[in-house]
Image 1 (cartoon, rainbow, N blue to C red):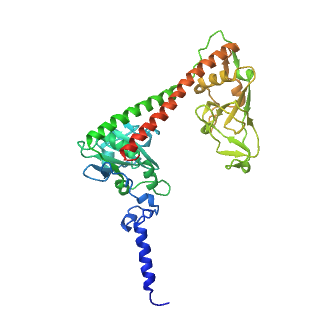
Image 2: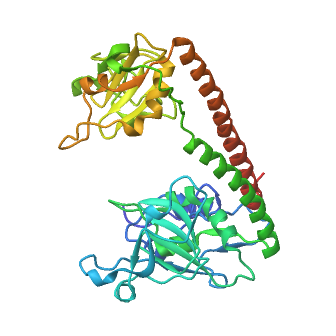
Length: 422
C-alpha cells in the first residue's frame, strides 16, 4: 500500500513522546550505547544512579574538578626484569572479601620501574581509591602508599583534598556496588568500562560534613571488624590432663564413610533427601541449607552426627541437625561411648592437625585412618563440664554476630542518610 496515513503518523509521534516523558522508559543516545564493546540494552546500566537525591550536590566520578579515573595494567609475565621491583602492584587478592574497603600498604606482588614503563599500569598516588571492575565487581581499597594495579581496577585519583576526603569516597562508592554489578558486561568476565564507571555519581557534601560522616562510619566499622576478629579467632580449647587415658576414635564412635548416588538421582527442586558433598557446604557450626537433593539414599547421617571433611581439605568438622545423605567428601561420626559434643569440640580443636594420606589428586583421609585418630577420654562428668564451659564461651562469641548485624544496620542507615534516603 502506497502513501502515508497522517493520523497514524500523529499517533506514532504521540506514542514516542509518551515514552520519553514516562519515567519507566529510558532514552539513551546512540553514542553512549556504542561506548562499550558490546551493546547491553538493560536500562539499569544507563540510568542515572542517584536521581532521587537532592540533599547534597551530585558529582560524577569522571568530574575532573575532583577526580581522575585511571585504569591499571600488567607487565609481560615472560620478562623477569619487569617483576619483583619496588613498586607495589595491587590485584584482587590484596582486597579481602567482606570489608567495606581495605587500607592497602603492601601488596603480594611488586613490579619494577621498567615493568611499569612497558605496560599500561599507572603509578597511583597514595590516598587513591581503588575499585575492582572486572570479574569480581566492587571490592574497594585505599592506597596508603604509591602503587599500581592490574587491569581489573578503575582507580579514583582525588585531585583536591580540600574538597574531597578519600575515606568518604570509599564509603560512597561501596554503596554503588549493586549498580556497578548491573552496569558490568562481557562474555568470559563481566567488566565496567572506564566511560561507564566515570558516569557513576556520588553525593558530595562540604569537606567538614564528609569528615564528620567518616568519623561516625569508621566507628561503626571498627566495632564490626573487632567482632569479626573475635568470631574468626575463636577456637574451642580443651586443657588436656595427662592422667586422662587416650583412646582411638573407632573405639568410642562409629565412622560412616560417604558414598555418592548416581548422577541421575540428583535434583535441585527439593525432591528426596538433602545431599551434601563436602566442606563447601559447611556453615559456622552447623551445615548450611542444602543445594542438591537425591532420591537414592546411599549413606545417611542422622541429626547430631559430626561431619568431617575427608578430602581437600582434610579435618574440618561440623554438625548436622537433620537426616542427610553424604557424599565421598564427608564422613559421619556418631558417638558410642563418649559425649558427642565433647567429641565434636575435641575434633574441632585439633582439626588443623588431622592429616590425610596425601593422594595424587586430593589430600584425603580414609575411614580406617579416622578410626585411628587418638583422643583423650576423661570421665563422663568431666566431659560434661568441659562442654558446658565451651558452650558458655560460644554464647559470648555468638553475641558478636548480633553486634555485627546491629552495627551494619547503623552503617547502612548512615550511608542512606548521605544519599538522602529515608
